Amino acid sequence: MTPVTTPAFTAPGSVLTVMAHPDDAELWAGGTLALCGAAGAAVTIAVPRHPEPRAAEAAAGAAVLGAGLYQLEQPTTAAPRELLLETQPEVVITHPLRDVHADHRRIAEVLLNALPEVVITTGHPRRVYTADTYNGLTLDGTIPAHTVVDISSTWTTKQRALAAHASQPQGLGRPPRAARPRPWGRGQHGAARGLRPRRIRVMAGSPNSKSDRVTPEHLGHDWPAHGGNPFDADLPWAGRLYWARAKPSRVFPPDREPAGDELYAAIPMGYTTLATLERLALFHRGRRLAAWEQGPPSSNVQLAGLQQYQVLLPPDDEGRYQLVGVNWPERFAVGAAEQLSGRVDGPVLLCRVVDHCGWH
Image 1 (cartoon, helix red, strand yellow):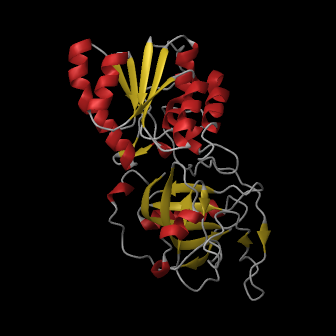
Image 2 (cartoon, rainbow, N blue to C red):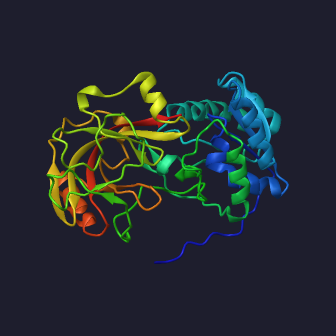
């Protein structure tokens, strides 16, 4: 494998980032903004105004990065146009126009509409970049890494800026996967190749179950309260589960899907993707232990770019789960899940993605 190298970073004279939420600049471009600020560039972060405490957190996070904060009163074309005319940045960073999050798409479109008049008038910005997205996905597929910035030297600064957003839970005391040092790259849940066996905690299944029907301890979203463990092969009914913040929920029947206040109380807010998974089959040591009937295909167009079949691996010693995208059609996904089950220490669950949306 050829190692990836990046040229020395040359900061622009000024940079403006226009994002949808108070923590988006830190999350998607924080390390790069800190690099620019340290090099003497004028750095400005613009986000729509949010109620407290998020407005104060936005100011605190910007200060850590060495950036000024501009809170847009109304996310209309006029607001970024005035800011662009005032700051005349050399570089602008925003969300992809086809981001999976609707709020991100809207603010990017607003900015794009303001650019032609401003560029004709001032000659700025000279360059416009779109940042990464959650797991590197857009509605049209994955994001190619045309520009990669090494933020090793500003990684701790980015972490401190993210920590300023205390109202946004990060899960297990760690930032989301997208906050790791890969600001403008590609991301995915994982790949089957090169996957190393992991140690897991297991507890025996029911007294009447077969000896190899082990059930990993469920350390994810322990919800619904009376839902089934995702890896429980003895559940008589097919079920669905949520995947959010790198954790699964317990399984619930398709006809009793939680919603409203119960759902918001169970899945912490803070930018992530909320995916609804349908259990298809359970494998252990290369054998299929259980299978459930597949429901109708999803009509959600936002699944574009997200692999339809996913394999849920058991939790490791620290309670961390992993979701691995596998190839379709279903027979290929079944084969991949069967092979994976022979390479990890514990059962694996083949699922189908039936819905997925931004969660903030």
